[in-house]
Image 1 (cartoon, rainbow, N blue to C red):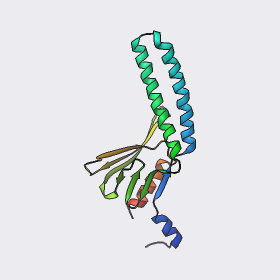
Image 2: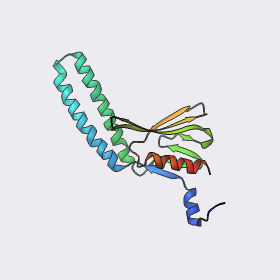
Image 3: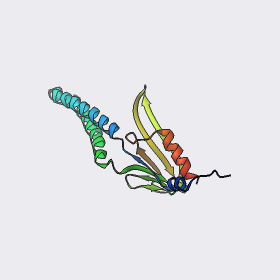
Image 4: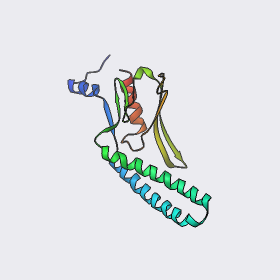
Length: 159
């Protein structure tokens, strides 16, 4: 038995759900990685006479901080574009990959933390396709929770 829904509610439910990047999360991440990059930059500069192994280790960490900083700055220019779109035809990722519901074997939301410190949030989709066999997409900067993501996927995949 179907419950009554207005025409406006039905039309809205047929539209795909867009998840956008959170400006607050991206700015906080940018500030964090600027401070970390500056700190490890200073350590790299101070370790220039300490030996090649120490310089290589600190330089490697500095390079990682720079990579994370770039990953926070890049989406700031695309705040008006959805990072993830879920609709009746499947899941659309911001990098152009589309996976239809009939090709999805497993759809999980991973929220990783170490001793209470958040490390990463990922959507992992395993498919029956040859390519991509599995799609892992970082969603830590998106304005959504795991419950919201899974509820949206359930709503669109079943109807």
